[in-house]
Image 1 (tube, helix red, strand yellow):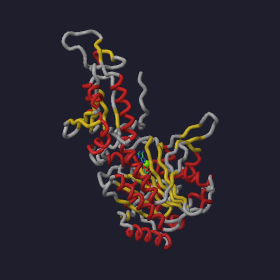
Image 2 (spheres, rainbow, N blue to C red; image 1 turned 45 degrees about the horizontal axis):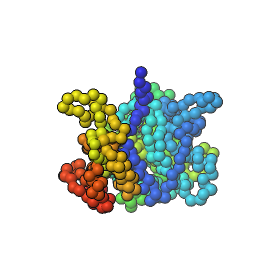
Image 3 (tube, rainbow, N blue to C red; image 1 turned 120 degrees about the horizontal axis):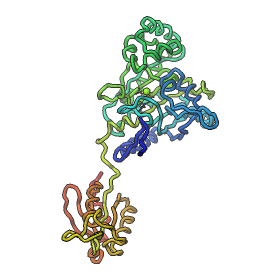
Length: 450
Ligand code: ATP
Ligand code: MG
C-alpha cells in the first residue's frame, strides 16, 4: 500500500520549484531596496492569537483553520496567515524599542482547510510585508508600490492594485447601522453563515465568497470622516507620484477583522474567477494595541506565491539546469558487462548487464573526470554527470536529458594528449577539442549569456 499526500497538500517539483525560487529572490532584492528585514516566525501558534486578531467571525478562523489540542492540552493552530504572528513577535520582543518604523518581511507556508482547486491549496506559500509604527499615507503608498515593483521584478507585467478605504472606527460605527439595514431588507439573499454573523460583523457579508460581489455592488458605500478621506486622497496622490498602477474600487472589502482605512488587492489581468487575487493587504491601525502592544499603526500585505508561480510557469527561463555535463569515455568502455553473452549484441544497456565496479574506464580517466567536476564547480559553472561507470552512449543520453548546454567528454586518449572534447548539445550539436589547460575559459566563452 502506498501513502499519498493529503488532499490540498502538494509537492512542488522542479522545474516549478525554480519558479518559486525566482519569485523569492526577486522579493528579497526588492525588500532590501525598501529597507525591509526578514522575520522568521513559528508555524504553530496559540489558537487564541488568530481568534483575537484575524477575528472569530472570519472564514479563516470559523471554517479554515487547522487547529488541534496538543499532548499538553494546549489549543494550537497552524498559521493561516502571517500578520498575527508578526504582531505577536513585535510585542513580545519589544521591537517598538528599536526606534523608527519596524519594517519586516516573511516567507513561508500558511494553512487553510479550504476546498482545494487550481490556485487554492490547503498549504500555500505567502510572502508578506509589515510596516509597523507609521501613521502617514507615505507608508501605505510605499507598501503598495513595493508590492507592484516586486510582481514586476518577478516577471509579471500588467498587474493592477485595487484600493479602497474602510475608514476608522468612527466611520465604521456610522456605517454599521446603514449596512445592517440594507442586509436586513433582504436576508434571503444572504448565505447561512452571513445571516448568523450579520449582527456581529455586517461588513463580512460583502466579502462572502457566495454573495459578496453582488451585495458589495448594491450596498451603500461607506462615508469616510474628513481625516480618513484626507488620508485616502493622499494615498492616491502618492501612488500616482510613484507611477504605481492602481484604481479605486469602492466595493472592495477584505476578509479579515483588523483592517482600518486603506485596503488593497492585486488581481491578475486575466480571467476573473475566485482565484484571481495575487495579493491582499491593508492598514491595521488598532491591531498592535488591541493585542496588548503599544499604540502602533501599521500597514502590510501578503502575496500568494503559488498563484504568482502559476502565472509565471514557462515564462521564467530555467536557471538551475546544469550548464556542463561531464562524460567519461575511457578505454575499455562499455562499462557494462553482460550477465550472459547473447550472440552479436553483447553489452551497452545497463539494464542488460551488471555494472562493473571500476567501469570500463581506467581509474585514471574517471578520477580525472571526477576531479574536473570539482574544478568546474569551483569556477562557478553548474556541472553534473551521471555515472562514469556507464557506457558513453548512456552518459550522453543523460547529458541530453539534463538540459545541459555542453557535454565535456574525456577519455584515456584525451588525458594522454591533454585535450578534452567539448560537445554542443543544443542548437549547433558540433564538437571540438580544447586543450585541457584552457578548458574553463573555453566553457565560459561557449556558454550563452543569461
Ligand atoms: P481569496 O479571496 O482568494 O480566498 P484571501 O482574501 O483569503 O484570498 P488573503 O488572506 O488576503 O487571501 O491572502 C493573500 C493572498 O494569499 C491571496 O491574495 C492569495 O494569492 C493567497 N492565498 C490565499 N488563500 C490561498 C490558498 N488557499 N491557496 C493559495 N493561495 C492562497
Ligand atoms: Mg480566502
